[in-house]
Image (cartoon, rainbow, N blue to C red; front, top):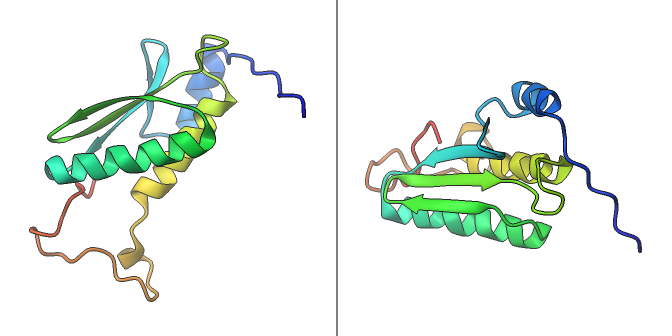
Amino acid sequence: MARPTIVPLSEQDITARLTRDLPRWRYEEGSLRRRFKAKGWKGSLMLATTIGHLAEVAWHHPDLLVTYGGVEVRLSTHSPKGITDRDFALAAKIEEVVSWRPGKEGGPLEGTPQDPGAAYLDDEA
């Protein structure tokens, strides 16, 4: 099967799509970026592992800056150099998975307890 042609998006298209689809992400220094806040090292590692899994199965690999208080994701497509549909697709999947809070939607999955000792993500993650 032939691979689809990947073309970089214009800065105007990037800005419009971020505003419309990913308002918590930004375009900076040639990459789509988002910082997810964690409550400590455990949360940062869980975020990095989750994002790493999503990137690996998508075969698209962001740069991650992992610190005690969170993870910054930096997405761009290396060939061709720039932001492409692949970056937006992975950013959207990362946003969906990391932002999922089953306790707020009802159903059989409770979500993490309100106990601060169990918290690993900042609610504003």
